[in-house]
Amino acid sequence: MATAPAPAEYLPEDLLAMGSDLRYELVDGQLVERPAMGAKANLIATELIRLLVNHVKVGQLGLCFSDGCGYQCFAHDPKRVRFPDGSFVRSGRLPGDKPPDGHMKIAPDLAIEVVSPNDLAEDLDLRITDYLRAGVPLVWVIYPKSRSAIVYRPDGRCTRLGESDELRGEEVVPGFACRLDELFAAI
Image (cartoon, rainbow, N blue to C red; front, side, top):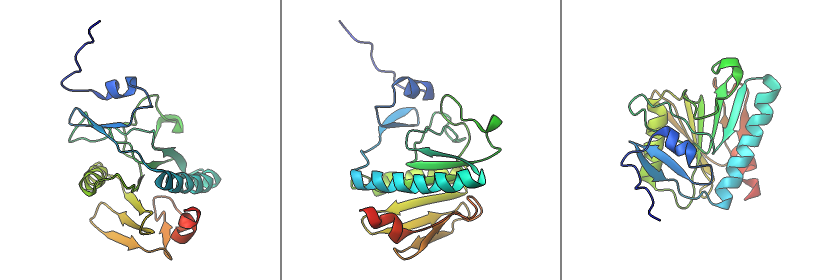
């Protein structure tokens, strides 16, 4: 039995129909495979999201999401869908503070990327650029191997943090702080 040819261009709805087992993003209507995270990077992402969730719940600040949440919020390319390793959306930005069934149509307030051995620098830079162009006010890129992080902001300011520094939520996640050495303690 013959199978139907793959579409020349995919839509965000096609990505949803594929299911959550596949690790793809959508860029310019084309499927782009996301490299597997790796156990260390996944553990760091999970721990950081756990810390964020605990903080956010206490203050009822908004919602936190893991790497399965897609964002279709890129005005320069409505067929683009990105899946950060973690994200946060402030209260009051979603109707009834409830997530949609499909992809998020708004940019997150915080996007988190945890670098894995399979991540290419150019691909990571493109994701960061997309987040900032979409208006994400805070992007955290975590580097488990060097035990460091870089914080990006839309105005072009970047801050490099070492192992003894604190990752802060600034005005995006008020009151959140996490020492990087404590975050990396499990690896």
